[in-house]
Image 1: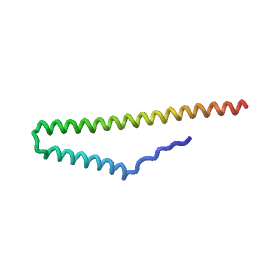
Image 2 (image 1 turned 90 degrees about the vertical axis):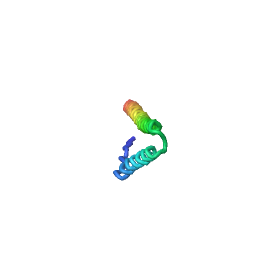
Image 3 (image 1 turned 180 degrees about the vertical axis):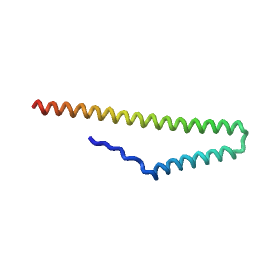
Image 4 (image 1 turned 90 degrees about the horizontal axis):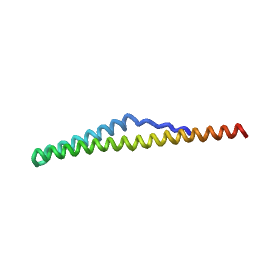
Length: 91
């Protein structure tokens, strides 16, 4: 069981950062030029910031849960392999 994670290419990482920066910039420009009172713009900006923060937290939590399940599976596989090796030695 040899699971090796392939790292992302630098082009993909650059693309994801550029996509996030572009989206954040365009939303900020949209809120800035929105023809409403300043307090409404502030409320929208707070909501956007909290949404981004919660998306980052959710993504990290899901990834951590996935990574921990992979570790548990590897430990269980190693235990099973050891039991089989001990059984084969005894037979």
